[in-house]
Image: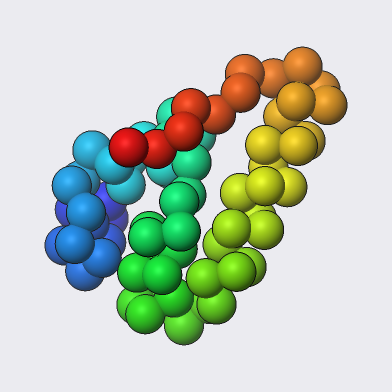
Length: 68
């Protein structure tokens, strides 16, 4: 699955895998590509990322690294 999505959004497979694993955040560029491919507005991807990071910080989880 990561390879197919990576090809569709024009990102390296490792970036998609890192996003899925929670090791890299969804940046505006990736959000725009996801919007184009999946139809979910980019702002929603950014809000989901922000909510995830906030929740992780509140429970003392590891902070997501900023994506490249």
